[in-house]
Amino acid sequence: MPKSVFITKLLPEIGIEMLRKEGLNVTVSPNDLPIPQPKLIEIMKVHDALITVSSDKIDKHFLELNTHIDIISQFAAGYDNIDTVEAGRLGVPIGNTPDAMTEATADTAFGLLLNVSRKMFFMHKTIEKGEWKYFKPKAHLGIELHNKTLGIFGMGRIGTAMARRCKGAYGMKIIYFNRNNNIEAEKELGAQKVSFHELLSQSDIISVHSVLSSDTLGIFNRDAFKQMKKSSIFINTARGGIHNETDLIESLHNGEIWGAGLDVTNPEPMNPGNVLLSMENVAVLPHIGSATVEARDAMSRMAAENIIEFYRGNKIPHLLNPESLKNRKSR
Image (tube, rainbow, N blue to C red; front, side, top):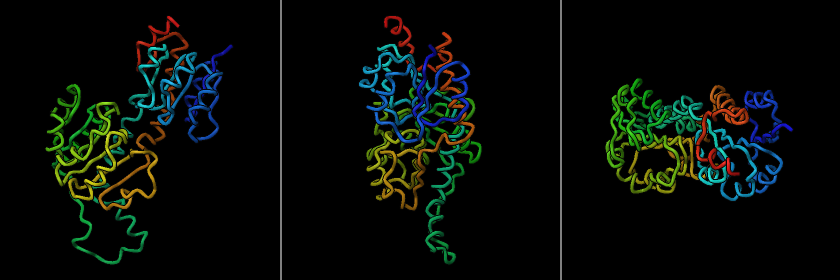
């Protein structure tokens, strides 16, 4: 009997068709509403493989009640919603889709930076409110970006792509905080690895591109914002949990930083009454970093490839927990 795959969201057809052509039985959730964990647990009782999204909670509880699952493939690069350690212990391989959204997410970060620096979101709203009446030479002034210092928090693929845009367009100096040296970025962009304190104190713009982990959870808090320049801009297109939103609001109110651009919030979705949405020097998007046809198609293809290659007995292209394969043999 063919293996069965459940997909928790309506994904681009390319990946779904790949799975079906492979002879797998595929069931796709009929709408885009999040599936409560208890319901997903029951659904998976009759499925062998799972394609998830970041809003699906794949924790120890879920895994222990579905130890029969062969493989889980995440329709995202980030995977903080999945307990990869527990999955590894239980012999469940976890795959993801890195690289697919690199350029799209970097474009989003760059776009947020431009919008914050010139207060574009806020100024657009003044037209809608009928407040555009006459020229005011000193009203709502933005700041220019030429020759500023860009600080990248997490110099991986997306961070490097963002740095490349800022260096090319505005001649920015690039500094970064990362666990390891990024030799490629250092050679290509003249990027310099610095301490976290130096990143905060020296950057005119800080752009966040790291994973959400116990080390990065809430790291951009009131103390961090106080160490930043009063003229600085904070950009986060990674995960909302990396910044403390209450502290961010307070720091913006107190003028401890100049502005902020967010594609991710804490929590998500953001409350429509959140004060950040009415701030002149803030731009917020509803987590659309990978929302291009090209990126989402690539993510769908890569998520499917993880499952297809697993069932073919080949190497899983984007495996997050290699220990799962060894532990799987003892299942």
